[in-house]
Length: 168
Image (cartoon, rainbow, N blue to C red; front, side, top):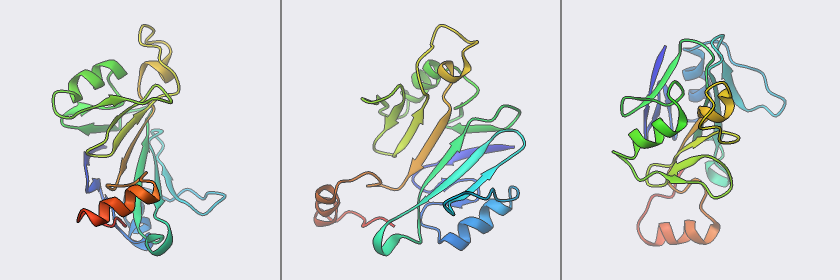
C-alpha cells in the first residue's frame, strides 16, 4: 500500500477534523482496528505500518486533530512530495523535503518539524552513519496535525484574534 500525506487535510482515508466515528470507519477500510487500553483509535497492519489518531480537547474533543503513522517493516510506503519518508535515510528525507518546506530540527529530540504544515518526523536518536541501526538511521514516525495543534492557550487566543481557524 502507498499512502500520500496531504497536509493540512490528512492522509489516505483519514482527514483532520473528522468525527470519531468517521475516523474509525476510515481506518476500517485499511484493516481491523487495534484495541487500546485508553480507547484511542489505532490500527496496526501486518506490514508494521501503524496509525494512531488524536482528538481535540474541550468542544473539539470528538474531532481528529492529529494523525500519526509508524514506520512499516515491509512494503507499505508513506510519501510526502514524492519523498519516501520511511524508506530513505533520515538525512536524505530532510534534504529532499527542504526543497519544498521549511524543515527545522526539534530542540528536544532527533526529529524535524515543518511548522507551517505541522508535519513532524521523529526518530529516537541519530545514527546517520550506521544503516544497520534502523531506529536512528530512518525516521520511525510522522505526525500530521491541524494548525495550532500544540498552541499554548495564549497562542490559541492570538490565532483566533488574528482571524485564524479555531482548530477542531
